[in-house]
Amino acid sequence: MKTKQLKCYIYTRVSTTMQVDGYSLDAQKDKLHKYANYQDMIIAGEYSDEGKSGKSVEGRPQFQQMLQDIESGKDNIDFVLVFKLSRFGRNAADVLSSLQRMQDFGVNLICVEDGIDSSKDAGKLMISVLSAVAEIERENILIQTMEGRRQKAREGKWNGGFAPYGYQLINGELHIAEDEAEVIRIIYDKYANTTMGIAAIATFLNNSGYKKKLRQNNTIEGFSTSFVKGVLDNPVYCGKLAFGRRKNEKIPGTRNEYHVVKQDNYMLNDGIHEAIVSEELWNQVHKKRQETGVANIKTHSLNHEHILSGIIKCPICGSGMYGNVNRKKHPNGGYYRDYFYYACKHRTFVNGHKCDYRKQWSEDKINAAVEEVIRKLVNNEKFKSEIQKHIGNSIDTEELDREHGGLQERLKQVTGAKNKLASQMDNLSVSDKHYDKKYEDMQVRLDKLYDEIEEIETSIEAVETRLYNIKQEKISGENVYQFLLFFDKLYDRFTDIEKKTFMKSFLADVNIYEEEQADGRILRSLKFRFPVFFNDQELYELDWDNESTVETVTMLQRKNT
Image 1 (cartoon, helix red, strand yellow):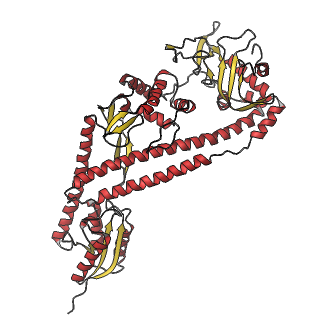
Image 2 (image 1 turned 135 degrees about the vertical axis):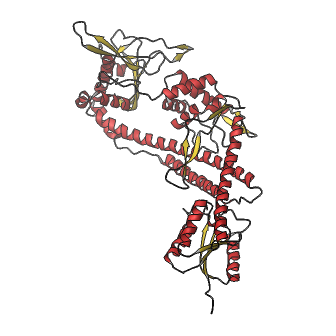
Image 3 (image 1 turned 90 degrees about the vertical axis):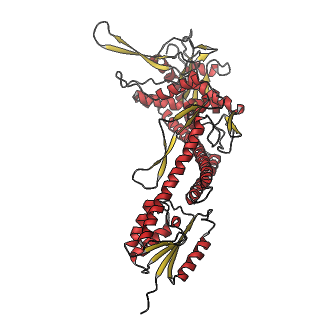
């Protein structure tokens, strides 16, 4: 009686840049074909995943198709032939679950190079042991690699990746780059010693002519809020090295999916590099960063808003003046009344001393003076006709759009390189005598790629922010112009928060005199976010101290407003 001829599938897998023990896909297929011929097996189908990781069955379409064909009974095969067990899978749970799916339909696995046949009890046991050992070995090597990096951090040595802005790498060590360090010192000084926030500091740097030095990991000369935030939060600038600020954590509910999570607790050690700012200054900034953003809850005058808060500038130090309230009990009864003032917070240093301007201005008085100027501006036919011309003008963002497209393409390339490197790491053979060194070198390269991706994403965020601001400025400008046409009819109906929103959209600065002038004037100048039109001039500023414009604008400020 003639014995039934066995049928099999052939499955091969290799990274696009890595081979297993010198065997390419073609070499693996040749070996499997020879084995099938020697065993007198019929090859019913071939499946191959090129450039796919064996860490998980997810992302291996040919492997999954093979399992589906087995379960459907498409060719009624008896075996799946693979070159080595690592080609079938590198995750113990995946290997065993996939094997069980096959055996449920009477199909077994043969690993030719390993000499394993799952149809035999010893073979199935060997598959279980080898899969588990390989996975444990990979985890141990990863732990050892991370411990080596952790020890390097304890010793205060730089752990790889791009040097932070303000530093340069020389023989693997951080050294201050003086052409960049100036900006770092300015950021810390402004944040610690003025009322400027992160966004204001970025604006100050950009408006003051500072250019960010272009590196291999950034292409934008301008400073973004995310850049300033990153500088303020990085202890490297006070001579410390942080380790473990980001951690690759498994996504709950998945088997082999991970994401980067920022950690609240991380290791912080003294670095061997020189600090750019003092530890005292960094602690001062760090404390302020932790306190920033905590809003005080209003309990009185809930509908009141300090309409010109931050816009009105101190006449001594130039910093924003902010709203203040005094609650006084009425002498003839038990009720209270709130009195609102604009005042300088006396925090800004001027010539080495804190600002000493302590005068408080009635909010009603300042608000009314500004409103009166705007009313006189808008009640002018020439003003209205010029506004109509500016509404609907197009904006040109072609250069920024090109820059954004270039960054997106670069991100795609670096992400591809990262994924390819991760695949190479996954395909390393644990039997390779240089496995540990290769894995560690690849891990360092992978970390650099992650740093580069983060830098590119930050650059993309900066460009998108600039694009958004330009477009929003255009939109806001048109909205403001539309509103200005009906200022007299609408402004008095606005709530305080609506008035504040309008003023912040229209006015950049409100500058006042130290004291009310003899003719009753309070306002020294107004700066606008959009051009205004007065006496055949397009102006961004009305300045009562400027001799060339005083005659044209004095009439706009009424005495005793």
